[in-house]
Image 1 (cartoon, rainbow, N blue to C red):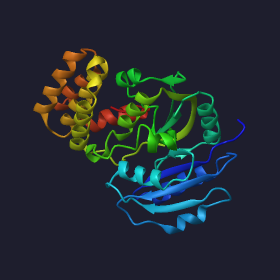
Image 2 (image 1 turned 120 degrees about the horizontal axis):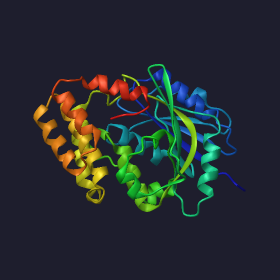
Image 3 (image 1 turned 180 degrees about the horizontal axis):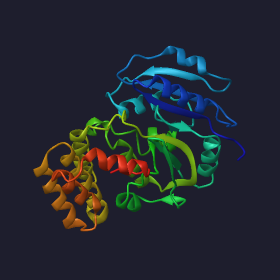
Length: 306
C-alpha cells in the first residue's frame, strides 16, 4: 500500500473498567503506520476521563458518552459519528485485538476494489478454554449470511469505510429490541451493499463469560429475533437459515420458561428444516430434560453459541 488510511476504533463500554483498559491498551499498541484514535463510548455508566492517560503518539484516546438510544447500537453510532478516521473499527470492551490486526485488514480492504467491510477470525475464550474460529473463505455474500450467522464474524473484528457508514449502507440499527442481534442485522445490510472481505487469521480474542450483557435476557432475545425475521423477508428464500433463527427463538422461549411458545416455534422450525438441532434442544429444555444454562456452557466451551 502506498498510504494507510487513518482509523477510529469505537469501543462501547458499560461497567467493565479492567477489561476496558486491556482492550484500549491492545488498540493503542497496534503496529500500524498511520493514526489510530480510540473513541470510548460510555453507555448508561459514569465515564472515566482518566482513560485519556492511555494515549500515545498518533494514538489518542477520547472519552464520550452515548448521546443516542441507550444500548450497544446507540453507543456504536455515537462513537462512529464522533470518529475522525477514514476507517471505523469496532471493539467490544471485553475483547482484545492481537498484534497485526489493523495492518492486515487495511491491506486486505485496499486489495479488493469496491470493498467496504473487512473481518477476520477470532479466538474464543470461555471458562479457561480457548478455541479458534476462522472462516475458510475470503469473501461472504448476502445469501451466505442468510443461511448462516457465522459466529466468526464478530463485531470486534469489523473494520468499515467511514463513508459507507455515513453515506452508504448506514449506521447500526437502533430499533432492534435491546440491541440484540444488531451486529447480525448490520452484517446483512453491509452484505447487501457489497460482499464482505474476510481474513482467515484470528486477530481478536473474544471473551465469553457469565457477565455477558445478554446472558439471561431471553425475552429480549426472542423479541429481537422475531423483529429480524420481519425486517428481512429474504429469509424465506433460505429455509435452513430461517429455521436457524426460529430455532433460536424456540430455545429462548424455552429458557425463559414459556414451554408452549417453545413448542410452537420448534414445530415451525422443524417444518422448515427437520435437521435443525436448535428445535430439539428447545424441546429438551421445555420438557425439563436439560437446563438451558447447561446447553450454553457446553456450546461455549467449544467456541459456539446457540
